[in-house]
Length: 481
Image (cartoon, rainbow, N blue to C red; front, top):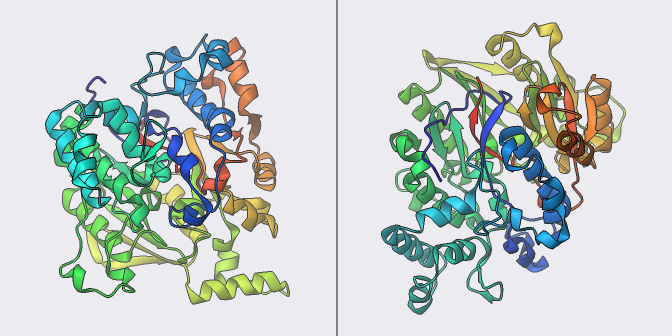
């Protein structure tokens, strides 16, 4: 893949130009019920359905938006069953191989062409997976393409299981985040993601795409004497995932403290970014440590400069304490009091005097007004499930708040979140099914530039079981300002 120095992200909604993705691999089909929780899945998924009937639409739509020449005029051939999905298979000569919609497995295969990198990475993976020396030597004989598949799926030739799969690699945002022209690498809390972090580190440090950015890579370190800390002192350990980082403007970063990202990590991120002059403002958003939420991008994402989608539990009304006889509201508020929302904002010029926000809604409105120049009265918050119980909680669980903006106002979401879809419609957004959209783009009846204020509904019966939406399944490398 050609070297390209255009890596720059300064917003959540600027038009997407380059993105790092990973299509579901056979490792997803190896998740068994007894290991699903350990591997961070709530359920087992049907691999063929998640590929053919769901994720493939995502790849096709990304190509129409980012690299149309790779797909325009080819849709019928690509969808022909005789093609055996070669268009989506890294290593196959018919693979789409875009330099704008970049497949992570391709990058790994390419760095494994180097004997020294191959030797180091095989040794490192075998060490963390406790492989025998015999298996390590055997893996050195694999081709780069075969070895890359093994590292992702854990299996050789689809039959020999060498070590566990890493099914969470479809959520590429969690491995790293581009902040302006710097790359922040993750430091996962869960053992199931350790191999992801290792592979990502080798790719970012060794692939030619990132050659000009090696001095702009930010890694977090464990605290001194971290190995002496008791296991239950999670807050002092340094753990970070990309779903807890949002670049809301070129000067302002949001960092979540959550089930997966510790307060120590958030503090380190802010310190590094301030020290390097990457941003001048940082807001730490501590959400309740609940599996329901996981990352901040599971409870809110940005749609436009002045439009956000958010779980209503974090609105002004609910955060300050809603007076109601509804038992479910009272119970949920009480839960939050036990592990409440905290928002604190720092300016690089005066870190000794932080600013506090009482609700997430207050913060999002302030970002739109103070950072993006919107009028306060124009800012709209679209609520998960149209803020109707129990649909708000049900649809947040299936990623109603985890949307990816392809450009200002054009976002991708799951088709199963009916009440959230209705809330978008009430807010003036067009609602379009991805199948209809792709047919119109292919036929020339519509262009991507003609879309405005549009929610694109993506099939999601199996994808939603993996507990991540399209915001999670993307690592933007380049966006327009």
